[in-house]
Image (tube, rainbow, N blue to C red):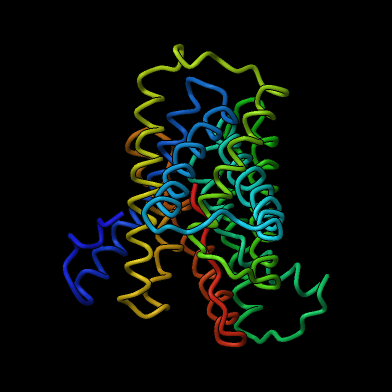
Length: 313
């Protein structure tokens, strides 16, 4: 957890940490796709979250000497585990069985748009401006371009089911984000994340055994274990440390740029490593979508001074 000590000091270290965060969290989508090729998706998500969550929890319990959560905190953690790690992370991982990696990553990046829509309709939030609506329009237009490009391609069985899983995952992250903003808890956010991952792993373990055929641990392929190892060490540990460091060293507007780079990294990496189709129309559609998401996020931060955290797969 002291990886940040090895980074250059000052803004140079912040930019390096931002680069690490952007690349690693972008490539975790591809690692997840590789892992679920040889094993059930929910079982993989359970294993990944167990090791990642355990690492955080043990670090804060025994190194930082932070006590166990209270009953009230545990209830909050349980709710967030369901929304952020069972529904959001679990379903987005499952969606990779049916849809391209880049598409799943791009749908996941849409969550700030759905946050605005949910708050507008369910919480009667009218504190929006022209930038917000331009961002919403661009986001929807970009997604339309991506879907139009792939509309005439032959899709494998279950494509629409995969899109549905990805959309539900994105909406779950949106609801979780709203819940965090409206129900703050006096608890270290990264310690809380560890508990959420650990609780989510137990719930996913049960769900995977109920609804998906699971395989014995000894039958998990070396390729899947390598992918899981990368997801835990790089995705859940290294990238989180780098993200924290970049937040400390860079302005919020700069440190949050990783959220718009991740989907592009996922698309390009998937095209190179997995041979997924990446045309100029898909790339431009993704860029238009992310510009829209950026504008929505910018308007939210300007009006309410909130920072929304990007989902990590």
